[in-house]
Image (cartoon, rainbow, N blue to C red; front, side, top):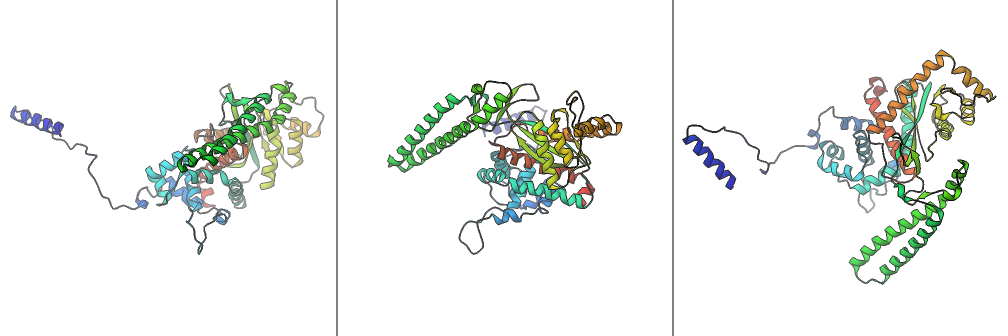
Amino acid sequence: MAQDQDGSSEQAEAVLSGKPGPRLRQAERRQMELRAMSLDELISDDHLARLVWQMVERFDLAPLLDKVVAREGVAGHPQTDPKILVSLWLYATLEGVGSARALARLCEQHHAYRWLCGGVSINHHSLSDFRLAHAAWLDQQLARSLAGLVAAKQISLDSVAQDGLRVRAAAGGSSFRREPRLAELLALARARVDQLKAAVAADPAAQSKRRQAAQARAAQQRLERVEAALAAMPAAAERKQRNNGDPAQARVSTTDAEARVMKMPDGGFRPAFNVQFAAETEHGLVVGVAVTNSGADQDALAPMHRQVSTAHRAPDHWLVDGGYVSQTGIEQVQARGSRLHAPLGTALAACCSPAIGDWRARMQTEAAKALYRKRGQTIEWVNACARRQGLVSVNVRGLHKVRAVALWHALAHNISRILRTPALQAA
């Protein structure tokens, strides 16, 4: 108020001096306003959120609805419509939002997310649980949407490209322990769990009980992670020995037992997962998703080819880089009816397998070289889109949960491609 009085006196002095100041409409942000406005008026008619909602309406949501516990005529609070949750996560993925807490805040503050919610309150626990609980449905929906495009003859799956993407795991490098240290941590974790359980049972104060119960749950989770790390130790020791290392030096993370230290794109070594995408080369639609904890790509070739061939049909041509080349992989791909396209180099030059001979002869032709150029144009671009949407690191633990996140990215990518291609959108 004093400032307003000072400003008025300065203006009065300016008028008396013959030099009046400027007359302005100044910002007033504390004035209360009442606006009659529906949620539907918050975003434009061609907003991406509306397009995502329209695409989700074409999904088969019956498997998700079957899992809803709340039923008509039965007591209980109604659950959030799965259509809302699917739309929120797909739109959030396209916008590069990968945190359930961040998404929950946006549902309160951002017009597009508020429009998708449609007045339904959302909390981060529901968002987080839904994101990871329906990997099978996401896999089914991805295959179903592609099958519809194949039936409409909009895509042919004649050639498919595959590549891997190193994604930072939710584990620190210092969380990797050798077996003796894991045994020590297991004993400590068990003792801590027993101690906290006894304290909860003996404490008569309700508030203290709740606090100690939360501590007991955290200790139990810590115990389970250490147990998982010890269970993964034999496989880690075997892998160490296979790579001509000392099995006694094998280490496993106590944060995420399934994460492995891998060489990252910047040349550093950090805990990560190897996310594998396969995409058809006509429009760049993702047709297969897999996640491994191996830094090498060779073992991912045959499983991905089998996944795509089972869901659809064996593509005529399968395009990969040199890191996928192995005798077993090439023979399995050819046995299912596909022709592998990969750079020759010196790999398997002395192998006498008929499949290897066919591959080496094929890659010396100009037609095969021209087709192989589509690999980088397709799958490297798909990986770049995933990076841009935030698939640089994950905040979940375990192969199954990381694959669920990767499936959301694949489905969001395909929706983006369909929305940008009128022929695909019409199909």
